[in-house]
Each structure stands twice: as C-alpha cells, then as structure tokens.
Amino acid sequence: MKQILIVFISTFIITSIYAQETLDCEQYSVFNKSSRPDLGIVIYSNDAETVWNALRLATYSQSQGDSVVIFLLAKGLDGFQTKNPDFDLDRMKDVFFENGGQTIACGTCAKQRKTDEIGMCTIASMADLYAIIKKSKKTITF
Image (cartoon, rainbow, N blue to C red; front, top):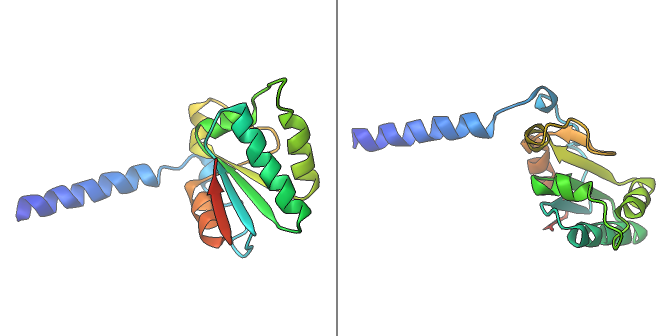
C-alpha cells in the first residue's frame, strides 16, 4: 500500500510539473476570463483546408453576431501560417480579425517551433485554453 501511495504521489508531482511548465510569455493570461465567447475554436491541424474551414466557420459565426476566439495548439500553429494557393487563409484571417476575432497561440508550442510570433496571435498558456473551453458557450476542434 505504501508503494502504491509513493508511486501515485510521484506521478502526481511529475505530471503537475510538466502541466504547469511555464515560459516567460506564459506567466500571464491574455484571455479575458470574464468574457463568454459564443464559440471557442481549437485548431490542432496543419492541413490548409482544415484551417480554412475553421476560419470559414469563425467568420460565418461572426456574421451571425457571435463572438469567436481561436486557440492554436501544436500543429495548428503551423497550419495557421500555411500558404496554399487553393485556400486563401490570409484573406480569411483578415476578415476574422476585422470582425473582432481573437487568436491565441500556445506558448509552449511556439517555443518548440522556435518562434515567439505567430501572425496576429497572442502567445499564451494552457490556462488560457482551459478558460476558453470553460467559458465559451460552445467549443469545437479542427
């Protein structure tokens, strides 16, 4: 029983350390915790068509009067920056931002990609992703 408890506590501590690993840019939260977006979108794909469809949904939702926030996670950071002649992501991003959309990028994911800037994104933390999921009326992933 003692060994099981020691293993459990050790696992909990190690998991907590990695889950709470912070970068300089992650020591603050950029997502307004008092806001309640109508739609939270998490983009995890680097496929241009998938990102394009996520942005199409985001801009359509905005046209219906909804507030939308996008969180870029892992490969989603790459996908958001993809250039593809078949899918005009830059135009879709411009419309999204012009309509008041906010895009937040995972700071740890940006660090792994050796970048601290993802065009028109704020670098943030898992705490922000958690808040988006918790506060948004609906959350969808692409």
